[in-house]
Length: 256
Length: 221
Image (cartoon, rainbow over all chains, first blue to last red; front, side):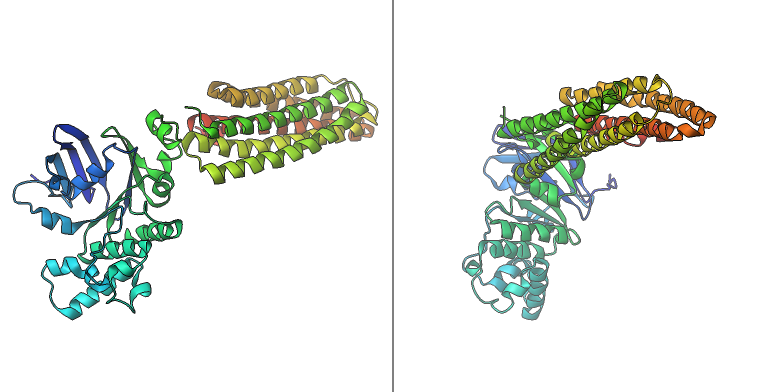
């Protein structure tokens, strides 16, 4: 049976465990196409685990498992016959610390996903690399040094290189797990600007500890606490007039 | 958990309340000065209003500083936004007190038009609104704030009565038009103070509940 959902990415009763410990309680959330959804909450609330369930990275941890359903464009992300690698091509991810491949050049880092997907022709790779680097707002800074190591870039540039690498395989969704927590304010601002630009191309789900960041760049925000979504709604409403007193306490820094 | 921010907010509220105290005194002195035919009391309003102006700047500076440094959210954000607006309304009330003082000085220089009956009633009503608006802010009392809004109609009715009476007196004796105009202006000044009190009450409802009720009352079916 198929149902048409207004959401590009949707979870229904998604739960996650590490061994016997439940990290995420049944969660039902939907992200509309070309929007940015922010996930906020205190450390250990399950927000990163939830994010990693969306592209089946969670199950790569020994002893970890997920239950429930995730749909991308109405197609199941979990289930028999679904290849997790194919899922991750459609749902890309950027992590807290920039992680370019140390042995690879800027160009090679950008197209590594395409190479793994079987793209061989140099001119095609080069063209797609330029497109991705432009999307990641990095092209102008690296176009004259594409053969230099990815690690030669600054932290902020490395993170944008990782974003370019994720975008190269043309995903539908980009998951970002605290992508600016290791960056200075200028690099952070650039990534935030970039996220707002990128939503024309992809749907973004971002985990952040920085509430001002969530407020600045997201359309909707989910507040996680102890493994469950306490409140999910329009960002502008959630930060000015939250419904749940726990959200209120958290975003005003009264937790303790 | 008490935050450092809570101490700053408390200080800000106290600043605002101090200013509200000056505004209430300015209004009192203007009207009591008129009723008691006491020019010194009336003139005291001008000095009080200068203090109110200085306080307004201080409160605004504190709000801007807290917005910039604390980047408040939710109830904290609504409180500071409300204080910025209440601050403006208080300062304008101070201006209206000065207008009442000006008109009263002019009136006292003329032959009295008639015994003041409705004007003291109107003053009591407006004074009560101002007091309750400020109290609703102090106590975060949404019900009291909404009560202030309902009292606005009584003030409008008293103003209408004063206008009718004074106009009748002026028509009977054109030589008393100057005095009549003074009383009409004073009634108008008091009405404006009542309007500022309702603005404050609306801001209190917003700060407490997040609901924006401006324009909702008169536009409701």
